[in-house]
Image (cartoon, rainbow, N blue to C red; front, side, top):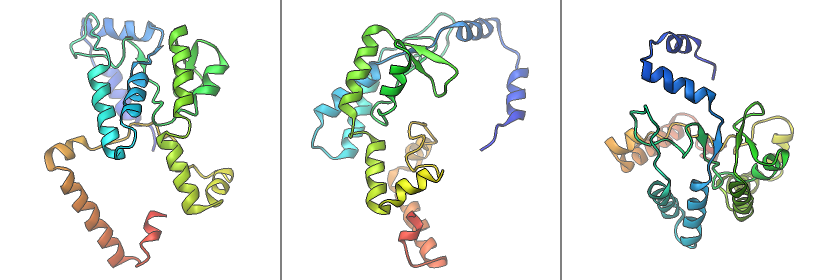
Length: 217
């Protein structure tokens, strides 16, 4: 996946209103903040739903997060609700992968990198301690932990051998939001997507190979 330079040039040429210019200036001059409200709510939900089917647990986690995170509107904004309490901030996705917390936090107390080594966000002392505690809770429970367990159960030592050889892990970049196709879920329904997946599996088996395990591999 490359960088769409043409699209970036079009964005740079876009004429902004005075309101938008002021917001852009404030955004780029603001120090990024690390918010922990989502992590706290996600952890509370996971504890409350222990023993339930994982699909329901994830659904209830999302519900609790959406109902509990603060809704902040800054002066000049037309879209209601910033992602965090900060004009420029983010939530660590501890429930997807919490193993990154320890090394990142220990590098520079009170700061954490934001997807790379160049820029760091600031944490309050309370948020710092909270993330360390939540990171310990999620160890062995995250989606990435489960993906690694599955990879090793299916591939054995190959899973780690491939990683050591430089092949990206199956759980690599697990925190990326990706394209979740919510529009298709709303317009067509989940059953329609399931049928489409089953049809494509059948096509693969009919046209390529009867060893269905190779498709997953």
